[in-house]
Image 1 (cartoon, rainbow, N blue to C red):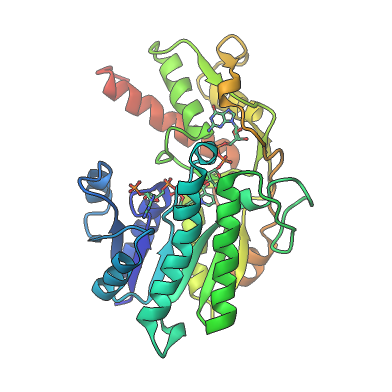
Image 2: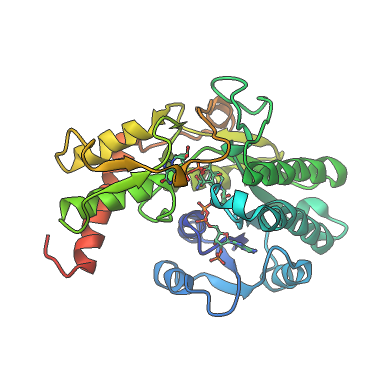
Length: 330
Ligand code: NDP
Ligand code: GDR
């Protein structure tokens, strides 16, 4: 039975990846942070078969202990402070966790693997946020990185450290440059979920407006359940490498509003949406659109859920969830 250790087990991707690996017969271990982590219940409810081990990406010895307990064949490093807007307010902490945390995990794997550095395969959760200021459209593996946020800078550090450990020590270390991926499990601070929750609440009469920042930014949005499949496929390759994972389609926040309000029969959302500089970023990533050709050709990976279905899935979920929380029948 193959064994995997996942950091970021309580997050959106950690949950989908756990489900995928368990369905493939893996013994799955999750690194869990802190005392009484409030998201622990979620893990126990959705993936009760995952074994948990405590640790933190900023604490190298805890990572070594986790590796000794899990003895994984594969390590998926999904743990990070992942909210871009927050990274300006907490740039040092973001650098420690999202940047240096990757180095800690790589170093722990290298020490743990000893004389056989390729024995433990490593996945790093790199991000399209690394592309930042538009240099090329669509963005591919070779596109110049020009990050625009402390989070993006930290991810670039982790990305190049992963490449460096592969080239220096012969580690089987791969980076997935994943574009935005969403789901009903997406954190409510991210724009897709913020919109799907608000649209559901407006439809149910629980809320009357929604305040956002920049409506013109464009993102290449896919479904998280599809994207974790690409992570797994990367670690099944004979050689480690870096891959863009994206849909190849881009949409603005306005398109997102059209699609989400459209799901509840509202064509003109202008009366419900206001803008507030509070939600604008000091530097914005204006346009993301990925070229997933390499993932398609080498990994045989294809996204299955398109933008319209993704938004409908999220709004439908939030209509049920919000109605249930409010004690309403649907
Ligand atoms: P989430 O924000 O949902 O989850 C982040 C996870 O990181 C949580 O489980 C959190 O655990 C954990 N974490 C935070 N700080 C630490 C720490 N100090 N030590 C160990 N774990 C920690 O992110 P997603 O699931 O959406 O994303 C997974 C990864 O993929 C992240 O690295 C993200 O940056 C990256 N990524 C995400 C994309 C997306 O669109 N979703 C796109 C590209 C990359 P806790 O419960 O303790 O807070
Ligand atoms: P992003 O996702 O920054 O791309 O990072 P987010 O959903 O936060 O923002 C997407 C775009 O929407 C604009 N926006 C708003 N965003 C939020 N959160 N809240 C608002 O009110 C709002 N109004 C407009 C933003 O300015 C931005 O342009 C996500 C994270 O998952 C990262 O961890 C990951 O690496 C990248 O995707 C790829």
